[in-house]
Length: 331
Image 1 (tube, one colour):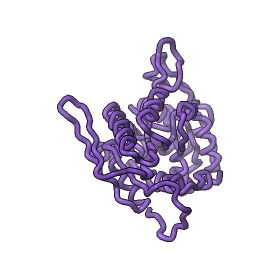
Image 2 (image 1 turned 90 degrees about the vertical axis):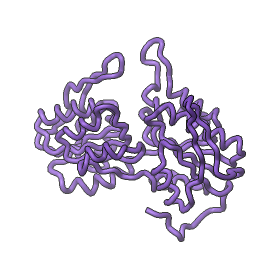
Image 3 (image 1 turned 60 degrees about the vertical axis):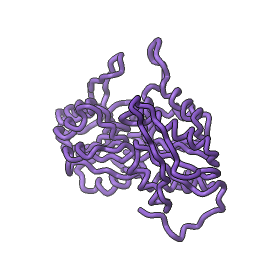
Image 4 (image 1 turned 135 degrees about the horizontal axis):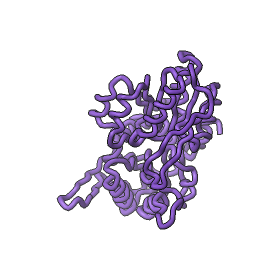
């Protein structure tokens, strides 16, 4: 999707838009820049033998309205440091306003002290982004809503389900007894909203997480799935262990075709092979996290990737021009 040439624009509040992309989101950054109609700003990122990172801007960002696109996915700690160093570089170069656009925020699951003697690392992440120099932030589908409260700077927490819902609305008429199923009870609210938008029933998978928080076990299904085509939804897929348990349980309960829908394709460790071997009709996700080509080759035609670039591009334009973002979603 390209930006409409005849777009009616408000007077600019800041200097011209500059879009920078880190090595964690190069393709997404290019798509966003193309949507807005600007060239991706040049930068040089060097990693020395001791793994220290240096960032050098290709030209001045003084007074500009700057957006840094960087997902903090694998390699997590390099991408985090790269983001922070880019933010500080722009701050020291006197950028007019700096927005950290983080499609996928690492450590988002560490959002509370649910055990003794553990950190709240999601709060540390937000603190570091602010201290590094960000004036604003944008992110997609946080694992927990309360993370918004960890930021002291303004920002936009967006959801890719606005994009996924259009795809699913076109898909549902082709399905037999389509039913939305969430992979756990914690996703019930978003699952209910999705089911309402699609005008289909909702079922929930009850699962229990181990005290370490690392593993889960699917126990039961609340709702009817026998003879139904399933839209199985979650916010992210990491190792795909929960997905594998959910799909196995759904098949045992008599489900027909299963369509896996999620926002963040983290896909760690055995995830790609698990998804490839599961009886899934389609895997529908987004490009918040780049998927390596070798993983795409394994998944083949089974995977459909919807781009969030038009959504982020439009929000960036509205933020730049001082227009409402909520109007995009009738809010």
